[in-house]
Amino acid sequence: MPANLTLSLGTLYAFLLVLTRVGGAVIFVPLPGLQSTPMPARAAFAMGVTLALAARWPAINAASMSAARLVGWCSAEAASGIAIGVALSLVLETFVLAAQVCGLQAGYAYASTVDPNTQADSGILLVFAQLTAGLLFFAVGLDREVLRLFALSLDRVPPGAYMLNPAAAQSLIHLGASLFSVGLRLAFPVVALLVMMDVALALLGRVNAQLQLISLAFPAKMLITLLVLSWIASRLPRMVHEMGGLAINASRHMLGI
Image 1 (cartoon, rainbow, N blue to C red):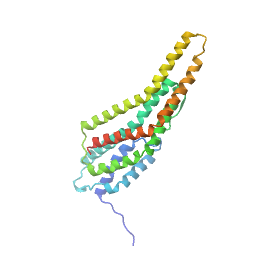
Image 2 (image 1 turned 45 degrees about the vertical axis):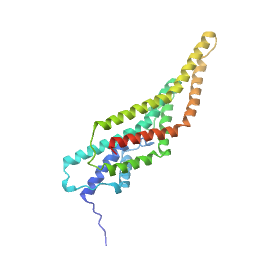
Image 3 (image 1 turned 180 degrees about the vertical axis):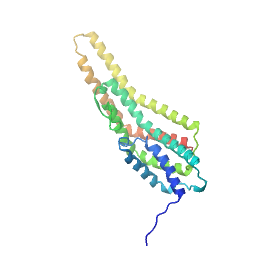
Image 4 (image 1 turned 180 degrees about the horizontal axis):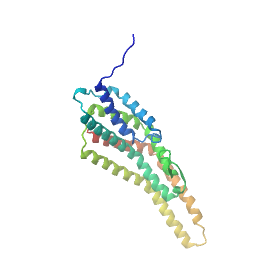
């Protein structure tokens, strides 16, 4: 005897609202290669995460749902998802900022390659920082924290209960300012060493004008940058974990959980 699969209208509303929250985050969450994938693949990924959270879907009374209320709830859900995605993407942008500052001073900006995320020419050090931070996103378990955050948010702040407030924007601004300062502090050791090298080469050039220091400055800067970055690389997993924790805490504060 054939079985008929029927879904209530309230279940469809719940699926749409949860999909809106998850889809808003997927746009900005720094998953490696996700931004360069086709839109149907990203939509399928968002639907897969939404179906994985089916046990946390809210119970929606379809009789009391109107078109205006549905649009308002979807807007609030999209805003909450985008806030989570932006908070997590700031973790990746911290390393991108540090790589941009270091690459410009060390001379790596002269070598460019295709950025797999934007399909545009970018500095080789910048692309390397993006890929490394994206892989560390999985290595330190931030992907599991994101799923746990979605499940917790659906329990504490079900669709229709989230309200936009200035405190959420203020938390996101403070998080961006904190991670911006972290990116600059990551780049400052490299920049300081390169400035000291420029001063030393300038003094040697004044002492003996016959020295051909210009041909030595470029490879020496690149070598020193690689040595310092290799020392910083051993501490990157701990830094990504700590900054990811700051982003998760800021997301919880924005959602009010």
